[in-house]
Image (cartoon, rainbow, N blue to C red; front, side):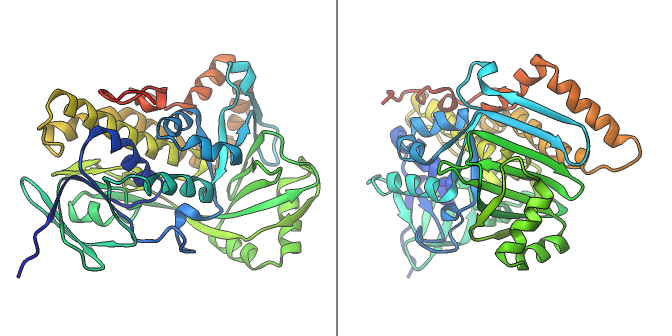
Length: 415
């Protein structure tokens, strides 16, 4: 005997940082929303609750303020007020100062553990949300009017007018919708750790480019540093196997003494780096957001901010259409086309920027390093170039979502 499906307007598959944010953003619209997340918040493998650091732009801070979670995040957020970029072993460098651009900070560094906890606390308060966690989407059946989703453990199927894929770079929903994605393996691995140094963090973020890949040292709220050391797969395997003292010595040799002697290191983790980019972000009754749409290299810290703007834009489009027509079909071609159009320039621009930086600073052909260093020095001398770079804190180009501008969604009163 078939089981009657639970009807919803929007089903979000993937309840990590981006999917959870979309569920919170949609709450005041009155839409019936379901959220499916395969991993419990307290599970050790939950990527939204690990110790990786995420750099949040000012637009992202505004979104989190609108969602009512920034007050829980702010005490553990370290502001980035100065950025130092250099070409390791060469003379090229550039410096950016937030005060010179009339802003308090370029962004904030927070651990995923803090972000995930703040979002999950708010999610648990949404009584109207159909929250299935832990549960996995086991089957996706696309129809002309609805999409049917089966979930495990056993529960009534979901029937949604719109399915949002927020289920990561290896998205099941994207595959079920037949939406192709290009994958480029950078042949790099990010070794991530928290370290304590003789000189406490004080709002300075370092981005150093090496032949193996970018090397980021970011301030944390407790005075420690979040280190993202990009290496070849073979070198990363070696570094991961080192005892703590030898790891710190190797890190000191690679980074230098700008923050003094490196004294302690926490748990290390390694993540292969690839560019995964869907050819299109919409299909029949399907929208892709976050890493399901584009999973970027962590250089410049743009990936999560871009994904959150996907969520904020989709919420805005749906709110606009609901205000115009309470009976609107939120999964219609017209609605999805509007979402795709609004995300196009920002998505393309940030993807090109991050991919271009990785390849530019990895290019060792004769003459390229010299030109690269000259470009960095010219950038350091150009106030207009620095001002343009500081605007990345809100988005690359195109229409900035209302939530990222500190404005409520259409038809929703501000808190």
